[in-house]
Image (cartoon, rainbow, N blue to C red; front, side, top):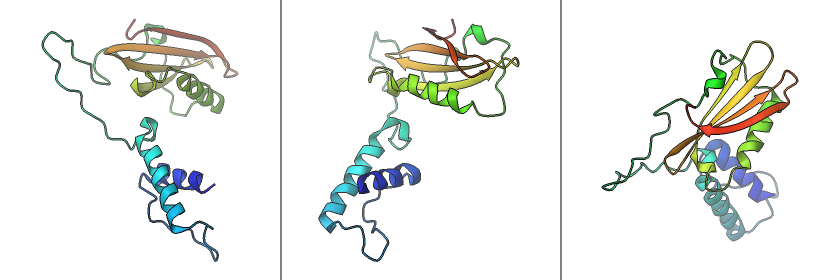
Amino acid sequence: MRLGTYSHFAALYRMSPEGLKFPGKDGDGLTAEQRAILQKLAWDMVSKYPYAGIAKFDAPKPPKEGEKPVPKPGAGPPAVPDALKGWKAPTDLPAEAVGADYNTYIEKFPKAERPGVAEVTYDADGAGRSAVAVLVVVDGTRWSHLLVYDKPHKRTSATKSAAGK
């Protein structure tokens, strides 16, 4: 339970829980050594998890002679496929069911692809349908995953194509 508490603290406040004392009359029931181990473990896990937004971004190194440079996130064609031309970014957030679905979809990416998620956009067509486009950069190739949802927020399709296609 304490490991979870320390992990949440690290993720929410983007700072190490190391050195924190548990408030309360009886403390947290851990020895100082146990607390230090759990706090360090929590920080190590959260600070290295790419989706937590804490890990430092390593700038790409210049390409060696004959290699193609890796595109920067946001460079090149947009993540929004041609299928969404005319759709607009709504001012409200996606429905809870849509948000849960596209996050689950991303979590199912192969482990090597998940850190490559560079952009996620949400669009609506004005007739109740919505779509989420996920741009993923893998080995310098930009892929667009398009998830389309109907009015009751059920996914009707999922396609993957080279970005901008």
